[in-house]
Each structure stands twice: as C-alpha cells, then as structure tokens.
Image (cartoon, rainbow, N blue to C red; front, side, top):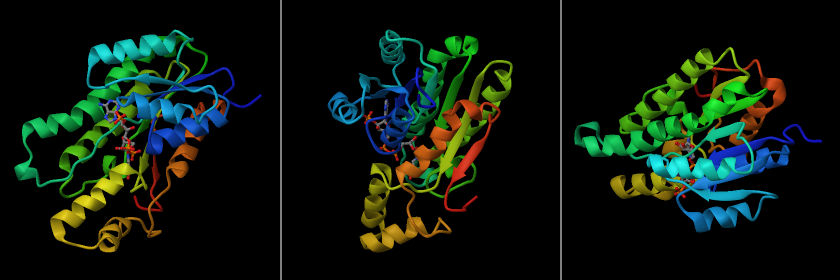
Amino acid sequence: MSKLTGHRAVITGGGTGIGLACAKALAADGARVIIMGRNLDRLEAAASTITGAEAIRIDVTDADSVDDAFAAAKAGGEIDILVNNAGIAAAGAFHRTSIEEWQRIQAVNVEGLVRCTQAVIGSMMKADYARVVNIASIAGLRGGAYIAPYVASKHAVVGLTKSLSLEYAHTNATFNAVCPGYVETAIVDNSIANIMAKTGRSREDALAELTKNNPQGRLIQSEEVAEAVSFLCSPLSGSVSGQAITISGGAI
Ligand code: NAP
C-alpha cells in the first residue's frame, strides 16, 4: 500500500506545468487524482497519462463553475487533498497597470484559490486527514519590480495559508504554501518572450535575466516542486502547517 492510497486529490491547473507534475507525484504516492482547468482537451490528454486520473473543467474565477466542478469531483468521494495551483502572471509598469488588469490577476490567484478551498473545507474540518497545499511563489515572500499585481497576489496566498493553518489547527487539516523561484514552464516561456520583445535581448540573455535570481543559476524543474508537495501531503507531515517553503536554489 502506498502512502496516499485511499485519498482523493484535486489539483487545479493540473493539466500543465507544475500542476501536472504534482498530479503525477500524488498519483505515484497512491492518491486518486482529479485535475482541473479550463482547457478540457488538454486536461483529458494529461489525465490519460496518469493511472486512474479524472479531468474536470473549471474556471476558478466563476463561482458556478467551481461549484459544478467540485460537485462532480465529490461524486466519487470526499476530497481530502487540494493543491491550489491554478495561476496566471503578467509583467508591466505599475503606473500603467489598469485596475481591471490588477483584478484579473487577483481573480485567479487569490479569489479562485479561496473559492476552491471553501469548496472542500467543510468536509476537511471533519476528516481524519486533510491537506491543502497552495502553489505560491518566491514572489509571495519578497517584492519584484514590474510584477506588482502578481507579487501582491502571492503575498495574499502566503498570508491566507498562515491564517488558515491557525484557524483550523484544531482539525486534522494542514495548510502550507510552496514558494518556487522560476520554474521551467509555460509561464516562464512567456516571461522570456516578453523580455525579448520589450528589450530586444536574445533568448539566452533573457533566460540569464531570470536565472540570475537563483543562486544555483538555473531554472527549477516542476518535479522538484512536486516533490515538496508530495512531502506536505504525506500522512506523517501532519505537524507541518502554516509554512511557506521556498524551492528556489537558495534564494530567500
Ligand atoms: P502554467 O503551465 O501556465 O499553469 C497554470 C495553470 O493554471 C494552467 O494549467 C491553467 O490551465 C490554469 N489556469 C489558469 N487560469 C485558470 C482559471 N481561470 N481557472 C482554472 N485554471 C486556470 O504555469 P505553471 O508555471 O505551471 O504555474 C502553476 C502555478 O505555479 C501558478 O500558480 C504560478 O503562479 C506558480 N508559480 C510558477 C512559477 C514559474 O516560474 N513557472 C514560479 C512560482 C510559482 P487552463 O489554461 O487549462 O485553465
């Protein structure tokens, strides 16, 4: 029997990047995984690569969509692991950032995460075991120029994680955040393209601009983030809660 046999895990944004790596890691640990996102074709293709995985469409910015997705997920049994991974990033000067753009980032990264957590918290409060892992960012722990809405959203995620760990400390649920530096995924591909377009730099120079933030001088791999998530979901990690664990090659 594997360490997560009998447990059911939802991973939002589980069809790509870090979310997909988390889904594969938790499935390898024995959990039944349900991956959620907006692009159902991509989700189903990803689910077909993971034994027993299910794909369910969700838009975390839409309350009805969240209700429907979690109702469908719970049809097979209660959810006792939630990885809040769905997120978006954008770069630009703060003085040129519209309030609509600000809200677009918060709607996914903060309010979406709140909605998904509220969809499972009721049953988690009564369960013998429950885990919520929020994929924040090193940007949830320190500032960053030209990414203020993203930084603010990830600080909110870290603050929420710490608050929920205290509020539900009397239950068997834990709440933790992981805070990666730059990870080699679509989000970083977009950042590199953005730097190239805005500065005229080569791909190599644009990449160096990102890797200079990591003392190890490289991009992190999604599987390295998933390894930390696997630990935080393990039954023996029950006394680890309210933490924001950096996965950043030593950057703090
Ligand atoms: P990614 O491949 O672009 O993943 C983002 C995922 O979020 C996608 O699967 C996307 O799926 C989903 N998503 C976006 N908007 C959504 C919405 N409204 N409703 C439901 N799902 C939505 O990039 P990633 O790097 O793996 O990002 C995953 C998480 O890691 C994000 O929270 C990001 O902020 C965080 N992170 C990334 C890095 C990095 O350097 N890559 C570093 C630190 C933290 P659909 O398009 O199908 O909806």
